[in-house]
Image (tube, rainbow, N blue to C red; front, side, top):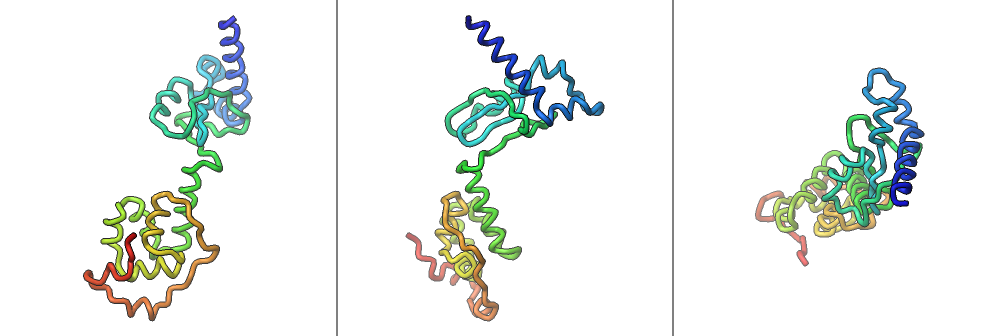
Length: 196
């Protein structure tokens, strides 16, 4: 009975892989080593978790995802016809509502709102401890964060680290005259940062 169930599941995985649009294109492309026989021997599958899934072979997928923290899983599922497949790489696809995806999109939006001049602050905050970030932050940068994103530097640091925060629809404006009037000496950097 168990052998029959395993055979049925294996056939389902193979049939789903061969029905995938990307795999059909890879098999049809003579420049790629992908063949129908290879797909029948080792089908490409979906290694599914709560927040993401990997698209690859079963063995390599279980090995590559063993230390991932994407919620409950892994669960081996058949490919869907429109799942993306790369013939040479394992693809990680984060689901729309996943925490990882929300944090990534929030950081991208913060960079977009801050503009070219201040966007490196997001990466600096993400890679730093709170104390290190606030120590490196100049008064001009703190002013820009307050004006553009309408949040204090500590909340900005938390948002860059992954705390989901409400962002403004439109960026605030930085007044060049006010910005020029802010002292930039190292001893005045921590001006009005209010550490909790």
